[in-house]
Image (cartoon, rainbow, N blue to C red; front, side, top):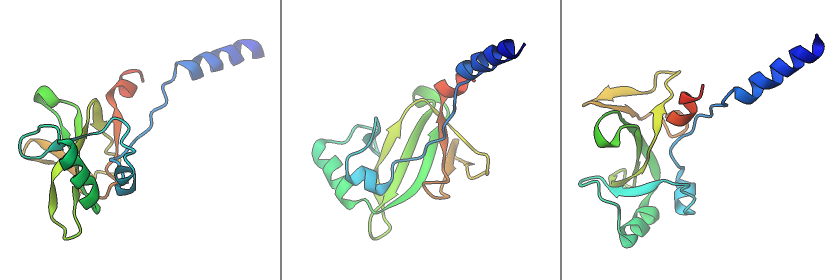
Length: 136
């Protein structure tokens, strides 16, 4: 009987998808180019930044501003991460990564103009991969 219980335990453990919340890249990670799939885009037209603009973005970045989740249209499930420079001005660019959904256990995310946004700090604006959620 113990062996059967042990087998069921192992089977359950192997079929359980561990879900890990993640956050926008830190300023240090961005400056070190440790972006792990994040792409930089122009905040006005949504076009990928040129190499020169991405270099300037990395040089001028000083602080996290807010995370935004796109819940509809072509970019459904995309997280946008916005940052500020040393004067507090928004940098005219954002980092984006697809296939995520906000983790809102502490209610930091709020709806603004059809988007879900979080300005509670980079470590509080958490999200999970939609593929992890689908396998739960």
